Length: 196
Image (cartoon, rainbow, N blue to C red; front, top):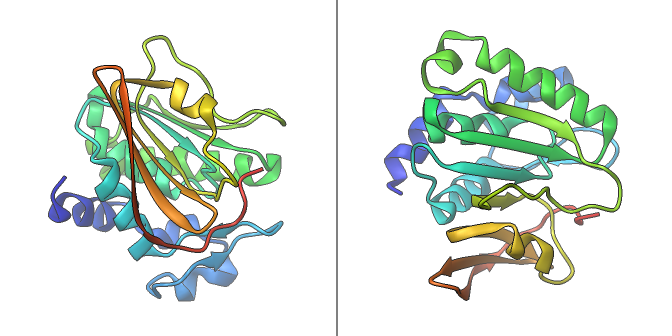
């Protein structure tokens, strides 16, 4: 995916709309910002790096694990366009409700309605689960929390071909499924809240 397309998405989906009021003055700063209950909103440069690795094509089905405020879910909705499908999952119920409202508000704006899809939504993840399966698998899976080890269940939720981007401990991984084979490459060090 071109850097320009990811940057276009960031311009179309302003981070400020997905931050608590107390953090909105810091929206343009390239750092993680606190949400609540120990959750943070990822810094923009990290989101750009992850989205470039994910390489989301128009029309894709995308699972967004650890969706938090809904910013990445809305960015993914912009990238997949009107023919795509995005499901954001967030474990913290209060954060998930707020994030879902943020996504719905974005989809209702001219910027959101023009590019995004009503099939983009953010839901509460049931405790003890990682992800959600989908018939045929997900074309792309984005995880915005650090796993201790590779969650095999997420790999099993990928379509073939498919791509999964996630931090494991402090290292960013890209897993690519193609022709029944899985490859895993690493792409730098990052700090994330733990995947629960």
